[in-house]
Length: 233
Image (cartoon, rainbow, N blue to C red; front, side):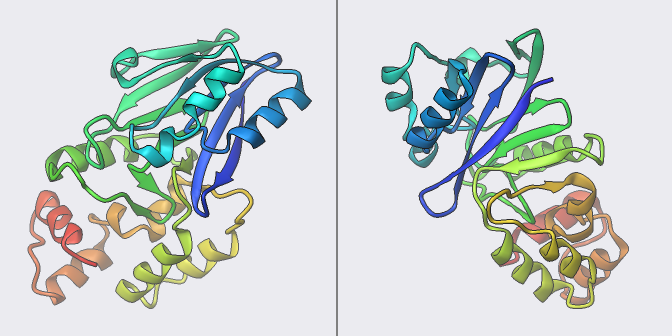
């Protein structure tokens, strides 16, 4: 079984090391010094470096990691949708999830999903592509995964996300429960919990539909509800 270790850097960025008994892969390795130290301590061989997307704050550690190891860089072009990366006989599944950027990728291994800036704990990323439909389909794809899927995101925006969620649903007690589980040293959540508190996943919830109606926003179809939620700040 592969393991995943989270590394925090640049205040709120989150990068990841996926590793087995002897080999490892880095995703968004901005914490290069910490990653290299961990690899040395664990006696691991870093084989691959890759990214959830090509924004600079996620690629900043690539050169350092490649120059100081024998790792190979995998770019978006090397990782087609529904393909996979083999690491010690285990498969890491690749999902293209455009919306935040055209080249956004999620990495799925066992019950863990590394989402980059597509999906944060408690919220979603900005749609910098302007393609709201593509982003909607990407989020729907993530929502179709098992409820026990653990979300590891590209940034820690959880507290701000819950402040926004509470403004929309002040009576949602699940927000308090969600906040009590927050650990700055290990930021993650299950898809099941996200469905209870993340406004951008709750477009089919009766309470969210009632809220959109009360706000005078389009609500009759799922697509209309999604677009209405994307206008809220």
